[in-house]
Length: 242
Length: 394
Image (cartoon, rainbow over all chains, first blue to last red; front, top):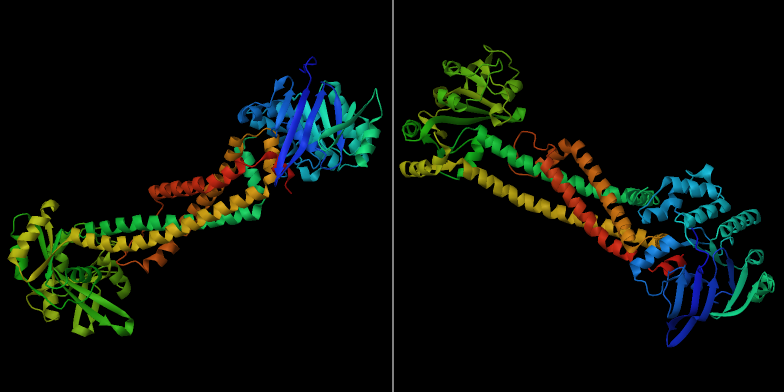
C-alpha cells in the first residue's frame, strides 16, 4: 500500500563531486527535488548534465558527497551497505534502456529474480505481475524470442515484482518502436494511477510531455521546470537538446 | 527458482567454454581416480599374492635374496642350490608348521617364444598351498605326485600345452622325458598357474641336480614368530639367505612408493593446471558479465548473493567435471591398467583397478577443494564490482 502523505523522493541540497586529476567535477551541485507518490517526473538534459548521476543517487546505487536523499521518508544517505541493498531491493525498481534481461532465464525467472534475492520467491506474485504488464501468455519464453516492447515489459515487471514505492527509468523507451513506446507509457500511466512514483531520464519529447513535471539539468543544477500547470514540458526538452 | 538454478543457467550462457572447462576438470579427475584406484589395487594385489603363497619365510641359496625371491615368484633359473637335507632340519624346528622344498628349472624354448618353468615338489608343497583345487573341484593330494612321470599342470600351463584330461602324455624333448598328466589346477591368479609341477626326485634326476633344491618355503605355526625363526635359520644355515616375506613385501612397497610419488607429482601438476583453468574461466566470465552482475546488484542482489552465485558456478563446474571424470575412469579402468602395468615394477597378475569408494571420495573432496579455492578470487571480484560502473560497462 502506497503512503500518499509522505513524498516518495525528497532530495535536499545534493552534491556529488569527483576528482579528475587535480580538478573537482561537480556532477550534481546542490540539487533539490521532491517527487510525490503517483507523480511521474521527467529528467532532461544533455549528456553529462547529471541525469544518470541523479538516478543513481535516488536509486541508492551511489552515495552523495553531501546532502540527503529520503525515499518514502527514510534517509538512505546514512544507511550501511547491507541495509541499503535491502532497502533498494524492497522500495525501488529500476528500468534500463537496454532492458538488461538474463538471456538464459525465462520471462518468469527474469521477473522473479529480485524476489530470489529477498528470499521470498513467489510464483503467484510472478504470475500476477506478468498478467499486469500483459505477459501472462509468455512467461516461459526466453528473452531472445521477444520483441523490444515485450522485453521492456519484462524489465518493468521485474522492477515491480517487489512492490516498490518508486520506479526509476533511464531512457526506458529509447530503443522501442512507436507503438511499443506508447504501450510502455500507457503502462506507466496505469502505475502512477496506483500511486507509484516514477522518475524517468529521457530525451524523448513525447515521453516528456506525458510526465507531470519535467526538470531540466545542466552541469548538475536545475535549469528550469515545466509541468502541466506551467510551461509545456517540450520547452525543457527542446532546451536540453540545444 | 534458486541461486543454484541461476548459477547453472549462467554457465549455460557460454556452453562451449563451460564444456571445455568441464572436460579439463574431468580429465584431471579421471587421471587422479585411475591412479588412486590402481595404487590401492596394487597394494591389495601384492598383499593377496604374498598371502596366497602361504609362506612366512623362504630359505634360498645365498645371493641377492630379492632376486632369488623374484625368480621364485616370476620363474627362472637360480645359479646356486641348497642341500635337500636342510628341509628336514627346518621342518624339525620349533614353530615351523611346514617346510616345503622345491627345485626350479627353466626350459627355454626360443622357437616358441616361451620359457617353461618346471618345479620339483613333494606333498609338503601341496600341504602348504592348501587353497589349490583341481579343475574337477577336488583338493590335490600326494597321489598326484606318486609316479616318477607324474605331471601336475598349472591352469595356464595346461592351456599352453593344450592338455585337458588326466592321463594325457607330454613329451619334453629337452630332457628326453615323457610325463603323464595327473591333474590340472584351477586358476589361482598367481604365477602358480604357469608352472609344470613334477615330483621333486624326478626333477632332480632329469635336471641333473641330485640332492639339490632351490628353495624351502616355510609356514610357521604363528606368523609373529617370523623374526625369531628367521634369526635362528640364519645362524643354522650361514650359506643360505633367509627371506622374510614381510620384508619382500616391504621392498616391493618401497619400490611402489617411489613410483607413486612420481605419479602423484604428475597428478598434482594436472590438478593445479585444472584449478588454474577453472579460475581463468570464472574470471573471464566475471569480466564479461560485469554489466549483468551490475543489473543483479541493481535489482536487489547483495555482495553475498553475487559471491555465492559465482562460487556456486565454480563448484558446479568442478562437480560436473569431477563426476564426468569418475565415470570416464570407471569405464576406461581396464585400459588404463594395461598401460600403467607396463611402467610399474612387479605388478600382480590379477585385476587391480576397481571402483574403490574411498578413492572416489578422496577424488570428490579434492576436486571440490579445487572448486572452492579456484572460486574464491573470481567470486570476490564479482562481489566487489561497483554497481554504477558495472551498469555503464559495455
